[in-house]
Image 1 (spheres, rainbow, N blue to C red):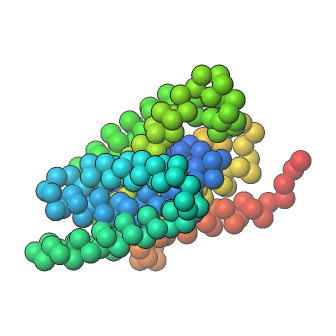
Image 2 (cartoon, rainbow, N blue to C red):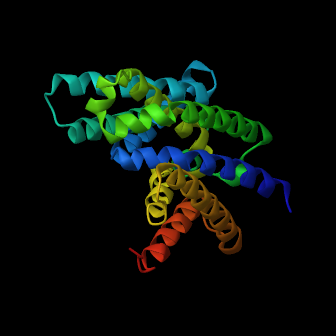
Amino acid sequence: MDEFIVRALIGGLMVAAVAGPLGSFVVWRRMAYFGDTLAHSALLGVALGFLIGISTNITVIVLCVALALLLVLLQGQRRLASDTLLGILAHSSLSLGLVVLSFMEGLRVDLFAYLFGDILAVTWGDVGWMLIGGSVALVLLLLLWRPLLALTVHEDLARVEGQPAQWISLGFMLLIALVIAVAMKVVGILLITSLLIIPAATARRFARTPEQMGLIAAILGMLAVLGGIGGSLHWDTPTGPSIVVAAAALFAAISLIPRRD
């Protein structure tokens, strides 16, 4: 097996393992559009990383967290509906990222790779970042699992029981930002949310407990990565979108199975 395929498989499977359980919370808390907004802002983080001359992974995480905090602040003022705010921030940050990149004339950036992913071009350094970032995200998610689940089931009750709701929500946003930075090379900025929500939505069909849903979502995400990379190599299609198509095909196929009550 070629070395670049091994790198793609290791990185892709690691990202899927994290995206599955995290995406379950995104589905339960109905935050798909929120994830999209953070993902779109990642391009601005990439542009700032090039502008300042530091790692784009760091600037993406910092910008996503800053955007999440700004959103919480604006939601508190209740002047606009949440979906309107998310739409404004998502499209503004994406467009601003493109404008900033256009001002750096000496810079040659493969925008297609950032927007739709180019997992077959990842280096061993990228794989190391995915393994370390993914492992950190998994550990943090395990630590946050029970309080975050309590907050998701009944936020008011969780507050009465003494759960620090704001800190837990902030930790969840930080996790999403970290996974977006890790997954950017796999499926790209515009498709990251699909890797979070499609395997989780598919897993709902089989899961009986929250833990089962997180585990099944991770397995389905890994199958989508394997199917997408295999299909991309066989039919010479873009790899990131192929992974998303594989995940959607799994969702469609499983949806056709009659449900047993």
